[in-house]
Image (cartoon, rainbow, N blue to C red):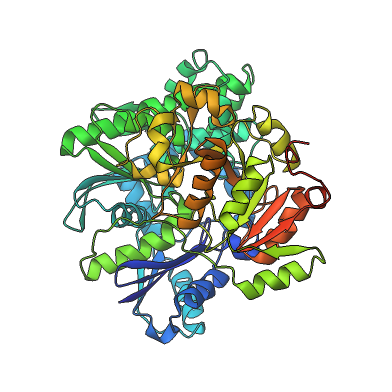
Length: 583
């Protein structure tokens, strides 16, 4: 069976699944270059069909994420909230307590689903079908529940037969969380929490208050948190949202959306960004880990699969993994709404047949770079380029000599992390790299660069890491760094002593593994920093042309493009490449 998955709202994209196996998955932002694009993923649909070689007439099912239609298009939003008249209505209703009833009860969540569902918004449903038919696709259409798609994206890529499966985000089809018990390829939903009680809303409040963009820059808050003291702000947050074991739920005691945001801004303005960030991070870890622990206790299942945007928080994921009741965690690599297209496709398959539960060895589901594209992009530069028969060894030599390397090779990563195929690499030994390289890339970050490390050596550098911990293959979790790591790779260790590693072996990425192996032979160090290859506030590069343009604009030292190597003028004109990167 061939299933096309489509997500057409926040971080839109498409995925193609054949007989339960992921063949292609791409988010629209990588094609139209609009970060976290909200809308119809026209180019993504065409791209996954091209990558898979599937004719649209062969598609058996189209699976569309979400069973409700969003009230607002992306253009209606500014920061956190709608800027039109409805914003004032929301504030008024929230202050009256109506929003708490409408969005904080099972009845309210059901009402939300009804009012925004297929029947009452039939014109929107017909519009979607018309667009799909205009593409020449005649297959039946499934509308997959938002959280069912999240849960499916996690379970059917985890490789675990029996596990506890939890989704948690801001809002999706009336809820912020669902829990399912999974066994023998089936997901059995056992619990849900209405969207009004999401802790994600409060993390977004802090992100917006600190001057960043909610839904986009929450990672900056996670980074800032390590620099602050949570104690003074925590009581205020606990007074607004908490967790209740008696209700098996988060409890939003505050208001909703703009009303609550404006209330909290008055409180936060007396504190530093660092202290407020530290408080929301600690509070999120406290209440979500309690939620997970209660779910584990109720089900007796210690293997936990996580999905939904809140689990983009790598420090939270570490806290959950370290819980005494948790055996192991797996976080879907595209844990936010960017993973809904794939999750919808997998859910549609599971509704019709049993899926073989296999671990996905990697997430290189995107665009490949052909030799012809590489040669064309390189010719356009008018620069001297050479092709190498041992490109990974050559790249390792440049790294060992102190160059900043950009690597664009093979199929593009699916999800928010660069995992070696669209990455910028550098030595992890330089204590100043986080300052000067971020300046060169025009980035403002509060967390250090993440490391890529050989799996065979990871336990020597990260406390508690075991080879069974597959989540570390996708940079979805932090670990406490060992003293050796702090000494040998200080640039990847945060002020709180943690790092977010990508563990690499020959199966997950043979070429990148070879590069790291050769680098270790030259330096004795098994890890390098790995950050995404993109221009500031742009999506990760996809094509050879984009790679060349980003390389030149970012003033990097060496571009490894497939089997080709392009040196910067500084490197090409130097007698030795040593320390060029840090100059």
